[in-house]
Length: 157
Image 1: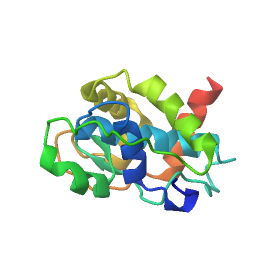
Image 2 (image 1 turned 180 degrees about the vertical axis):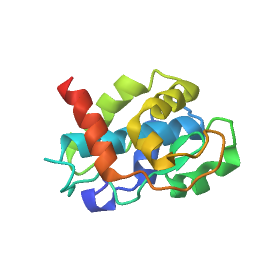
Image 3 (image 1 turned 135 degrees about the horizontal axis):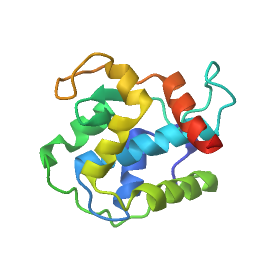
Image 4 (image 1 turned 90 degrees about the vertical axis):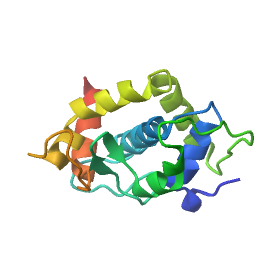
Protein backbone atom coordinates (compact mmCIF):
# COMPACT_ATOMS: atom_id res chain seq x y z
CA UNK A 1 0.00 0.00 0.00
CA UNK A 2 1.46 3.32 -1.07
CA UNK A 3 0.77 6.22 1.25
CA UNK A 4 -0.05 9.57 -0.34
CA UNK A 5 3.16 11.16 0.95
CA UNK A 6 5.20 8.40 -0.72
CA UNK A 7 3.92 9.01 -4.25
CA UNK A 8 6.65 9.85 -6.76
CA UNK A 9 6.95 9.91 -10.54
CA UNK A 10 8.33 6.38 -10.21
CA UNK A 11 5.25 5.21 -8.30
CA UNK A 12 2.98 6.53 -11.03
CA UNK A 13 5.18 4.92 -13.71
CA UNK A 14 4.94 1.60 -11.87
CA UNK A 15 1.15 1.89 -11.84
CA UNK A 16 1.02 2.32 -15.62
CA UNK A 17 3.51 -0.53 -16.07
CA UNK A 18 1.04 -2.89 -14.41
CA UNK A 19 -1.21 -2.32 -17.44
CA UNK A 20 1.26 -3.38 -20.15
CA UNK A 21 4.89 -3.16 -21.26
CA UNK A 22 5.67 0.43 -22.27
CA UNK A 23 8.55 2.35 -23.80
CA UNK A 24 10.27 4.91 -21.57
CA UNK A 25 8.87 7.71 -23.76
CA UNK A 26 5.30 6.49 -23.34
CA UNK A 27 5.77 6.11 -19.59
CA UNK A 28 7.08 9.68 -19.40
CA UNK A 29 4.07 11.08 -21.26
CA UNK A 30 1.53 9.08 -19.25
CA UNK A 31 3.11 10.22 -15.99
CA UNK A 32 3.14 13.79 -17.31
CA UNK A 33 -0.56 13.69 -18.20
CA UNK A 34 -1.39 12.28 -14.76
CA UNK A 35 0.67 15.06 -13.17
CA UNK A 36 -0.87 17.78 -15.35
CA UNK A 37 -4.50 16.71 -15.02
CA UNK A 38 -4.11 16.29 -11.27
CA UNK A 39 -3.00 19.92 -11.03
CA UNK A 40 -5.88 21.14 -13.21
CA UNK A 41 -8.50 19.20 -11.25
CA UNK A 42 -7.21 19.79 -7.72
CA UNK A 43 -6.38 23.50 -7.61
CA UNK A 44 -8.53 26.61 -7.70
CA UNK A 45 -6.37 28.97 -9.75
CA UNK A 46 -3.03 29.30 -11.51
CA UNK A 47 -1.56 31.64 -8.91
CA UNK A 48 -2.00 29.32 -5.91
CA UNK A 49 -1.09 25.78 -6.89
CA UNK A 50 -0.90 23.80 -3.67
CA UNK A 51 -1.93 20.32 -4.78
CA UNK A 52 0.39 18.26 -6.96
CA UNK A 53 0.46 14.50 -7.48
CA UNK A 54 4.16 14.39 -6.48
CA UNK A 55 6.96 16.91 -5.95
CA UNK A 56 9.17 16.49 -9.03
CA UNK A 57 8.72 19.08 -11.82
CA UNK A 58 8.72 18.08 -15.49
CA UNK A 59 11.29 19.53 -17.87
CA UNK A 60 10.67 20.49 -21.51
CA UNK A 61 12.96 18.04 -23.29
CA UNK A 62 13.21 17.52 -27.02
CA UNK A 63 10.67 14.67 -27.08
CA UNK A 64 8.21 16.40 -24.76
CA UNK A 65 7.84 16.64 -20.98
CA UNK A 66 10.27 14.50 -18.99
CA UNK A 67 10.75 13.79 -15.30
CA UNK A 68 14.54 13.49 -14.91
CA UNK A 69 14.37 10.79 -12.23
CA UNK A 70 12.28 8.60 -14.55
CA UNK A 71 14.72 9.18 -17.37
CA UNK A 72 17.56 8.00 -15.12
CA UNK A 73 15.58 4.98 -13.97
CA UNK A 74 14.57 3.77 -17.45
CA UNK A 75 17.33 5.06 -19.78
CA UNK A 76 18.85 1.59 -20.13
CA UNK A 77 15.76 0.55 -22.13
CA UNK A 78 16.37 3.17 -24.81
CA UNK A 79 13.55 2.85 -27.34
CA UNK A 80 12.65 -0.67 -26.14
CA UNK A 81 9.75 -1.58 -23.90
CA UNK A 82 10.01 -1.79 -20.14
CA UNK A 83 8.48 -5.13 -19.10
CA UNK A 84 4.99 -5.18 -17.66
CA UNK A 85 4.99 -5.36 -13.87
CA UNK A 86 3.16 -8.23 -12.24
CA UNK A 87 2.46 -6.68 -8.84
CA UNK A 88 -0.54 -4.37 -8.55
CA UNK A 89 0.05 -0.90 -7.19
CA UNK A 90 -2.44 0.05 -4.47
CA UNK A 91 -2.76 3.56 -3.09
CA UNK A 92 -3.88 4.58 0.39
CA UNK A 93 -6.29 7.02 -1.25
CA UNK A 94 -8.51 5.03 -3.63
CA UNK A 95 -9.36 8.22 -5.52
CA UNK A 96 -5.80 8.34 -6.83
CA UNK A 97 -6.09 4.86 -8.29
CA UNK A 98 -9.44 5.78 -9.90
CA UNK A 99 -7.91 8.97 -11.30
CA UNK A 100 -4.92 7.07 -12.75
CA UNK A 101 -7.25 4.53 -14.35
CA UNK A 102 -9.06 7.41 -16.07
CA UNK A 103 -5.73 8.77 -17.33
CA UNK A 104 -4.85 5.28 -18.62
CA UNK A 105 -8.21 4.90 -20.35
CA UNK A 106 -7.87 8.33 -22.01
CA UNK A 107 -4.16 8.28 -22.96
CA UNK A 108 -2.99 4.66 -22.78
CA UNK A 109 -4.41 3.90 -26.23
CA UNK A 110 -2.03 6.37 -27.91
CA UNK A 111 1.49 5.51 -29.07
CA UNK A 112 4.52 7.20 -27.53
CA UNK A 113 4.92 9.25 -30.72
CA UNK A 114 1.26 10.32 -30.62
CA UNK A 115 1.65 11.43 -27.02
CA UNK A 116 4.84 13.31 -27.86
CA UNK A 117 3.06 15.09 -30.71
CA UNK A 118 0.16 15.99 -28.41
CA UNK A 119 2.44 17.52 -25.77
CA UNK A 120 4.28 19.48 -28.46
CA UNK A 121 1.00 21.18 -29.40
CA UNK A 122 0.23 22.26 -25.84
CA UNK A 123 1.29 25.54 -24.24
CA UNK A 124 3.14 24.22 -21.15
CA UNK A 125 5.86 22.51 -23.21
CA UNK A 126 5.89 25.25 -25.84
CA UNK A 127 6.17 28.06 -23.28
CA UNK A 128 8.99 26.32 -21.44
CA UNK A 129 10.97 25.94 -24.66
CA UNK A 130 10.23 29.49 -25.92
CA UNK A 131 12.62 30.04 -28.83
CA UNK A 132 14.42 26.69 -28.55
CA UNK A 133 13.97 24.69 -31.74
CA UNK A 134 12.14 21.37 -31.35
CA UNK A 135 15.24 19.22 -31.93
CA UNK A 136 17.52 21.07 -29.48
CA UNK A 137 18.15 19.84 -25.93
CA UNK A 138 16.63 21.73 -23.01
CA UNK A 139 16.19 21.25 -19.28
CA UNK A 140 13.77 24.15 -18.83
CA UNK A 141 11.18 23.49 -16.13
CA UNK A 142 7.55 23.40 -17.26
CA UNK A 143 5.70 25.93 -15.14
CA UNK A 144 2.85 24.80 -12.90
CA UNK A 145 0.91 27.93 -13.83
CA UNK A 146 1.09 26.99 -17.53
CA UNK A 147 0.01 23.42 -16.74
CA UNK A 148 -2.97 24.57 -14.70
CA UNK A 149 -4.07 27.11 -17.32
CA UNK A 150 -3.74 24.73 -20.28
CA UNK A 151 -5.58 21.77 -18.80
CA UNK A 152 -8.13 23.83 -16.91
CA UNK A 153 -9.13 25.41 -20.24
CA UNK A 154 -9.67 21.89 -21.63
CA UNK A 155 -12.04 21.15 -18.72
CA UNK A 156 -14.06 24.26 -19.53
CA UNK A 157 -14.17 23.58 -23.28
